[in-house]
Amino acid sequence: MPLYEFQCQNCNETFTKKMSVSEMEKTKVRCPKCNSENVRKKISNFFSITSKKS
Ligand SMILES: [Zn+2]
Image (tube, rainbow, N blue to C red; front, side, top):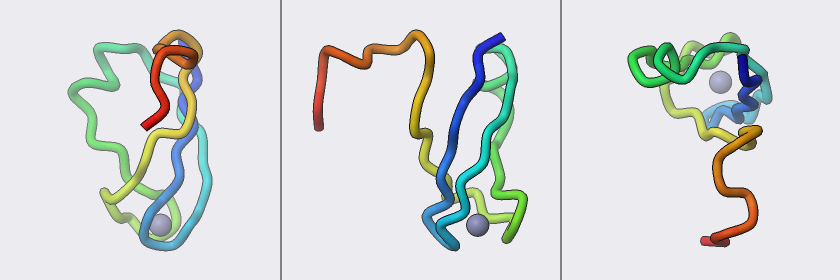
C-alpha cells in the first residue's frame, strides 16, 4: 500500500497516510490537527514524479 504524504494548506501540518488507491479516491483526507480538507498531496510512490513540474 502506498504511503501518501500531505501538507495542510490551512495550518501547515505535514502528515502521512497509508491507504490503497481506491481508498484514496473515495476518502476525503483531512488534516489531523485542524480537521481541514484543504490538504495537498506531497508525494506518491508511483505517480509521475519525473514528468511534470507545475
Ligand atoms: Zn491543518
